[in-house]
Image: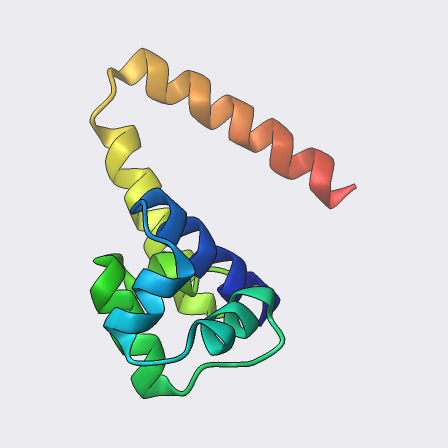
Length: 106
């Protein structure tokens, strides 16, 4: 769950919020939020939902490394971006991905 905390921290910082501000808007102490961001504590579902809503981010983005379904959503977004490119660039990127996957399978 450490990855979850790091992602929350990343999106909080991207939103330009301090721990204190996010904690206040979510309704938890800044100490508790800090423990969540460090991966020391796992947020209750209700708290996690409030954090995601306050940060206005996708649950998939925040839980990307926690849930396998999040990977599917990420792959779908990558596929959508790829389809917007010209065919030549799509082919180039697919060749690169094939190479990288083959290297990882060794």
